[in-house]
Amino acid sequence: MARSLKILSILIVITWLSLLAIFYTVEVVVFKILTVSWLRSLLGLVIYAAWVIAWYACFMRLASRYARQPSSARG
Image 1 (spheres, rainbow, N blue to C red):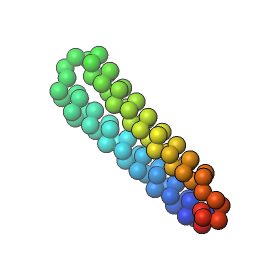
Image 2 (cartoon, one colour):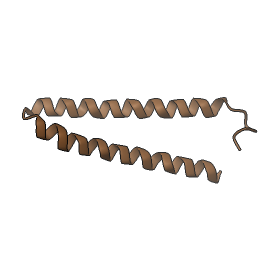
Image 3 (tube, rainbow, N blue to C red):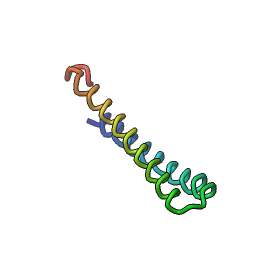
């Protein structure tokens, strides 16, 4: 139980830090390069959507891998 709580906490922290990196990237790179407001908004939303999809795929892969293991192998 303690191990899974530690792993879950680490995943939450990594996810949060990567979201901050995405926000920083959009703020620094996209807002400085593009001057058209609608294009900045569109690109920011596309980057955020790609981030959400990537993390969803990672979590689903981890969940399916963990669900396939027999209970004795989980520790």
